[in-house]
Length: 240
Image (cartoon, rainbow, N blue to C red; front, top):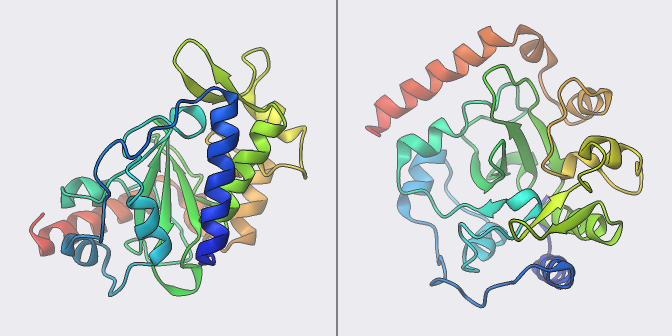
């Protein structure tokens, strides 16, 4: 869903306060604001509008800085159409057209996207970047919901500051991050956090709940190949 802008600003501000208190050095406009989306965004993702909530996040100047859990960063507006579309190559079985999402947060092994149109507009979806991944799933119903979960994770000492790299990390280094998250259900939503969850019952239940095509998930490789073919055809038609 699309957050009220005041709710989103408050949720991000609360995350910033919590992250800073944990040890993160938060920049002050470290680079020029991102402004409005370039025309390429509309062509690539086949949409006629871009939500104010997404434009606001992109305008904060946090691009490529490791401010999010597990050293994640905000991805800038795409300038390379081919790369932007290839980033969606693991989004099999989504309940919305695969092009109607923009890569927004990158966590090295996971990609979070913002859904741009339709009844799922404003939702945040996550994809593991792995050859055999079958885990497309909604990470949060909205941007504000996502930042709120991360703030709660810091408060619960599930997300902690790592002195070695200067990032926030999920887990204390002694136990598996997924185990720490699962112990705190329902107070925390583990799927909001950028950790791998292969074959977890919670993952499969959430996929069914949010409308993932489970037949496609079961088909695995074949469904992935069909998506790759669709991406290649789209790239060819757009000349990217």
